Length: 203
Length: 284
Image (tube, rainbow over all chains, first blue to last red; front, side, top):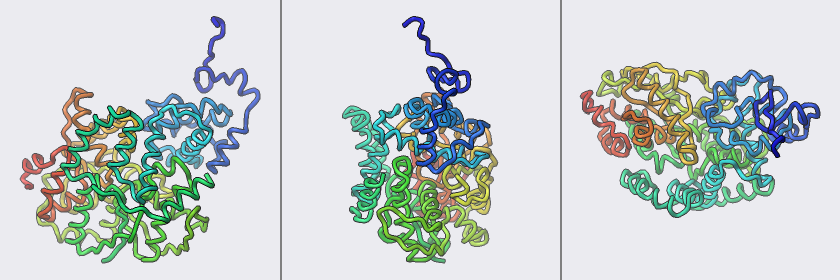
């Protein structure tokens, strides 16, 4: 509709997230509580000093800067947060966590948000990121240790198909020649399999 | 001196040169590294992104093994180090571990490789083994993220300006340069999932090394090494500027100073060939 413009929120500068209208007047605290419970971190302690954002090495590639993402959680803007690029672009370098003056483990909150997003079946904005982590963990589950060659091949096949896998062949061969590819995987480990099973049960 | 070693998965694959050079210099220094029996993956980033409980349990399993041995545990990989330290904090608080029954005393220290060599082996032992001074070399030391951050987990004394690797290389007489990018992120696993971002981060580190007057970068982490070493050709094409910066595992530079005969083999595994630089400086 022509007259239905998406407003830009004056506080967080996010298209379509109007905190002047619906969200700020009636704060939705259930999402904040869910995140605080899952992470054990006090999201409400953030006073928007922006130290996390200023130290973040990948902020330029995020749609919501880290301090704004925390503010979104405080406001209960669940969809904006769980569908954001930010939670999947974060490199887990922990600079934000190290520098936060209020002791908020922001990198851990990013983990919790990814976990909530995955458990609710939300499609990750960077689809290849969960594909990578799954390929990595499947390899660990199977062999006890990650087999880099197998993990990279599975990841490439699942994220970019056969064509992608063929494109990787040259690099793989070069690495093989340089002795950087372990031929045989490690042997399966029962304890590791038990750990995976327990984590699956308890989430 | 005898210590436990948790090598981590990459040292048997991607970072074989790191593994080989660690073995060689330890032998020269009279350090017995005892690889943990039946160690398994620490879970790395993929576990903590997926499940907190899984992340702690995968790492804790290895600490259980180290605990039985009772010797200090040396960890060459930054990501492994941080995951093991996270599990250590968890275990020391007496919290349960999902899917694993573990009795934990925790009477041992977990140390990154550079700190172990500097603090436990020490300057005197390092200096005594030097057969070839590295004074013609101007490295910067790149520590990456996870041996230092977050300090509440890593117990890093100086998380914004770590010194272990600088000290080790200075004791080999290398002219180590100061710079402010010691702990800036190389992109970690974004190298696979968002290579565009990884290349930007790596380029910034290569640029800053050049600005600091360095002729090479020394690292102490398999992923840092690969992320800085392997894509310089692609970064050059993207940036329209030629990058050809040798990236050394700091233990390779120790092997160079100790005149280790296996040096050639390690350097042959690099993407950017460091041998022209070393020849130019009269070091090989």
